[in-house]
Length: 251
Length: 251
DNA sequence: GACATTTGTTTGTATATCGCACAAAATGGC
DNA sequence: GCCATTTTGTGCGATATACAAACAAATGTC
Image (cartoon, rainbow over all chains, first blue to last red; front, side):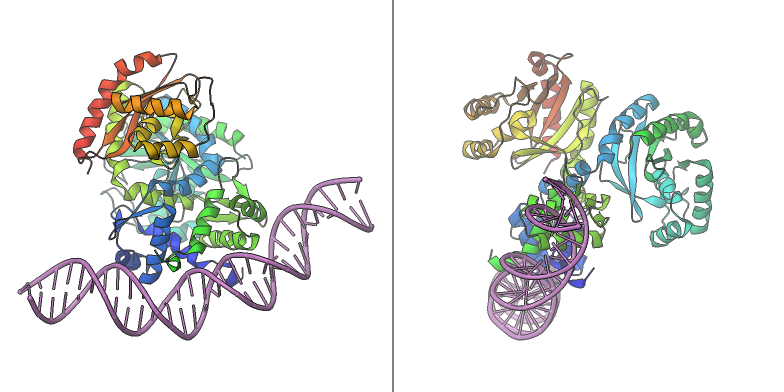
């Protein structure tokens, strides 16, 4: 690609949108400039553009995003058959298991939820399509990493901020790589409260009809209700059944 | 705003993202150019920029969006307290009602789902945060329209494509405006299979602590199970209870 | 296979945008 | 209230981008 085939104004604008997040629902021009490392004048123009297009509100001081930006994410969700196709299978899976079931794909060092069927929520974690979790400590993240060539998985772990969310979180890259090899052999991953105390989950990779891993599905359960050691015996058959059905319908 | 405070390259790029959708998961340069009404060369540069940034994949012929674009929508969902605050109330509501409960806001002529607690799905409709429905024929859309000044609501109806999804769909702007007046008086809206045969729903507006309508919540039920005439008697008390609780916590 | 049509890419040039420097305004201590 | 600091707004030269038009490659048609 030639350098002139890159619209830097567009790239800068997207960076500005992403500057909004968890702890920053409202941004001033100067704040956004700091977060994006762009010139204030540039950020200002981007924010005013967003406001003009209705993607943001501006009260003269703070900018906030409007629901219109959901159109952008929705362009992916509705454009990609994956979430739509997976959803009913997930519903059925969640129903049979009596637990929440989710599907996700890898994006950099994180997994992104693309569909979810939730049972009555017991956990503090509140997930929905678009939600993100670090790949290294999530069951779906582990199987997705395990599906990559070792070098790539290793590279992603290097780029991840490996922090111990709970005393049980595995953070040593070597131990994690060993774990990935084990998962590659077993065909599934179990997480025992590595993300949040009291939460276990089990995941399997989902392949399309050509055998390429295109997503992961999982079942999450309260540790108090289902100990990690029992997760596989209890839910693996259901997951494998779903995985098999999906393989036939995913192109 | 001065004209020079508008980054048209950014605006064009966003338009290109939105060109992807339901029926267009994969776009060629020429297709995207037609959809966005932009020059092919311009669209090409936007798409190549998206690919370069990892928001799109390019196989030499077709462009497809990647899950990374969900970051953009997620920037809103996580930046805005509304969905996060509403979710647990919705879970509780759905649980008590034994039916799916949702929350949405208005964006142009459409409502956008910002949170949802679903029971076992019976309908063909598959909704998740970011999903959109036309406002004129959805229960939440009706209460949100009713909360606007008449002129504004009327303007939105004018801009809406009023089509009859089912034989029961109300499509006459005058009848719809009458309906809005009725809703304004009653404080709730019931939809009887106007969106899809077999689906009824009831919605109420949700106000923040200053009394401004910031969203709508609804309960959907199969018409076979709960006739439209019974919706209010059955679910209105639950909805009003939730609305009252939300009013106290929403700033 | 030749022709017409569509699509993708490149080029030149007029225009728009960037980043910088500076002015104006707001904010925060004290 | 005053000064220091931060933030916002603006003018300008340098640079990047859009548009139109032409070209090249692919695709479809007969």
